Length: 400
Image (tube, rainbow, N blue to C red):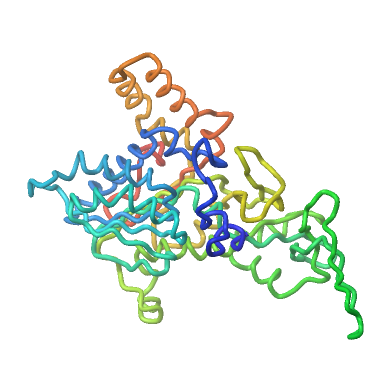
């Protein structure tokens, strides 16, 4: 999965010839549908900044920024409320924009989208190949990961009479038979009739990997123990590690011993974050799928030319984050957006629209984001914070 998506110049996200996003691409993300999505994420960030006592400086971090649309909408919202261009009257200093992006082609697009803002407000605009290279900061750090975790690789396991075994990927081509040195002909295996070059195969026996990943968290161990023979289980170790890294980026160390051993210093700036993705508060058995031209296709269809995704296990992310941060949700995307005031903002845009066609476009886009039969239900929003004065966070806490 990781090879198909991010292999240099040939992966789905790294090949500049692939039209990934938008009508010409394979899918459309929430930020591309309506500006209101990013605006409400920006408002949530500002709420947490106020709850933290309005620290003097902030930093924005995005994992998998796509075309930069979400970050652009967040920055515009924050600038209208807390930043005053060229006046010296800013309510807060924006120190840095950090983008975790592996694709050179996508970095170029993001640069074109965000460079002007960074220059106008005098903040750094930096890229990182991976989250681990983003350092802790004394600035209040705001993190967003939209459709990032669903693209991380995972192990697929199947429960057998002999324990859990890994489901692996093998070629569908017949093995090349050994020939003597005197042979001059070369056997070229023919692809199968349907053209699929890969298939799933079950490992011949349980191995140390299949046993160890299930001990990654109590949540996984309990889930695995209660599933019947024949069940499958998707486990993303990369998701676990990235969630743990996020909690270390903005959170508090668990113990003084941990600080000494791991050289993890308390983040004096604190912070908050949102993870928005497919999934739920549970492990999944068979959510792996591929998208091509806005349709679901076989996961082995045109490797490197299709988007691959698997549902996010938010329960696993919570356990990875541990006690370093306070965890909130997940909520459905519809609940999050509606509670954050989406209807009010949408009607404001409708009143400003110059014609009926534009008004209809705005309303249709908003409805799509909260559609209970689609994005509104399928996407979940999970929050995490390190704000000592505010353990309850709206809109996740219904009693807030």
